[in-house]
Structure formats: C-alpha cells, structure tokens
Length: 126
Image 1 (cartoon, rainbow, N blue to C red):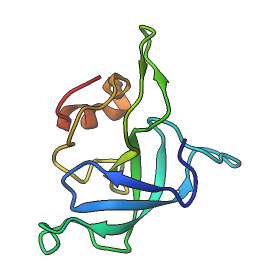
Image 2 (image 1 turned 30 degrees about the vertical axis):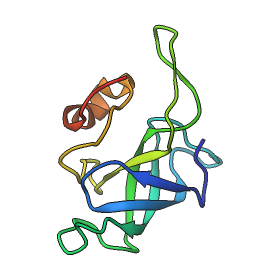
Image 3 (image 1 turned 180 degrees about the vertical axis):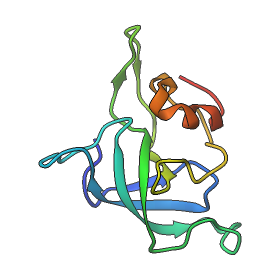
Image 4 (image 1 turned 45 degrees about the horizontal axis):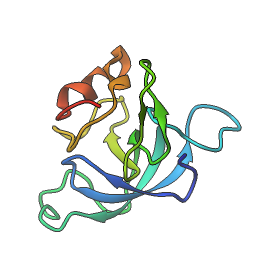
C-alpha cells in the first residue's frame, strides 16, 4: 500500500534512483495505491553513474506506475506474490514509459492491453 509521502525505488533505466509519492490518482477520496495503480511522484535522488546522461532531473514531477509492492498480491491461479521493495516505473504525460527497459521481474497482471508496453520492456514475469 502506497500513500502520500512514501519513498519508492525506481527500477528502470530512466536515471532516477528514488522518488516520493505526491498524489494517488484514480478517485476523489483515494488514499492508498496498489499494484498497477498510477501515482504522481517527485524525483528525490539520481543514480550516480548517469547524472549527466539522465533522462530526468532532480525535483521534476512525473507520473509513475507501481510495479512492485511489499504487500501480498494474489494471482488468478491462487499464488500469493510479494516483493522485497516498493518500486515504480516512470511514465510521461501521454502514458508511455520513459525508460527503455525495466530491471527485474514484474507481475503477470501487466500483460493486459493497457500496460503491454511495460510488459515488453521488462526482463521477466512472476
């Protein structure tokens, strides 16, 4: 469960290392975000190796898709899946991914039509 002021990791090659959640999108009174939800984030830290080659800058505001959470998520076949960290992947204003690849596996729920581009740039599924 991700809420406002949560610090999240970024698991893609956009250049950001950590982000802070500013707002949970998807409803008037929505307080927490789950796996697959879109949130508004601010860039907190950049990766050291790519500071001058980064696609993003510190302090900028972006939308992000939550791809991993510590809370348990139940697959359609009944298997419980949870990860060790809360991670997001950055998206631009039109909903397309900023990075060209996602590091680590993502859940199979991203194979739907809305998130098919994230499934194509990921390394595997769980």
